[in-house]
Length: 211
Image (cartoon, rainbow, N blue to C red; front, side, top):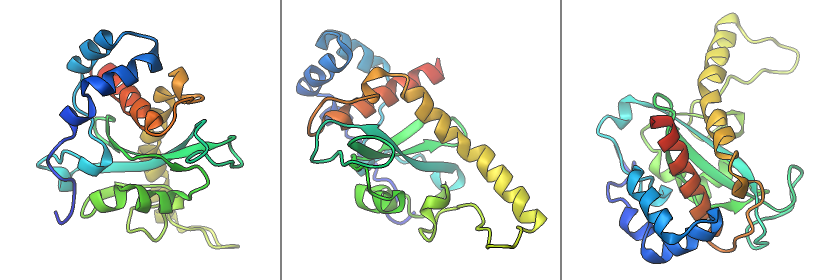
């Protein structure tokens, strides 16, 4: 599978006692509560160290980015959508609809194709069948057919695009569920705070989906 998805998780490193103390105030609970929740959750590694299923090449994955307002001006940069957002790239399993990995945030004015390349997903997705929207054109991912000016798509291509949209919508649904959490409406943390918050929210989303 080439350079796809290294097998050593960051689970123990990511959720040390220090990280639990950092996560606790994000959700207004005690570190002990965070510990109990984390122990019930399946590992969700950062994009740099993703656990690869044995049948990863045979499965379908979806990648997309979302903008999250972020108060740290070193990462959050003014854009047309939000004031000072960060771009977070997320990969989901198209079958289970679970979030399988998330990348470290990049400035919100970064195009999705570049964010994918700069924040890690490009390296770990090599060899996988990965759906994406038109923002990822010329990246080697499966994107919709481009409609040329003044020319309609052939019927077969229109059907392909309709199916592509139907499946790819699952990542948008994942974002919608994750953004129910208030912390992703306007993250006031700094440095790695947003990265930790997205990981925690994605864990909770997976737990709710698997329940």
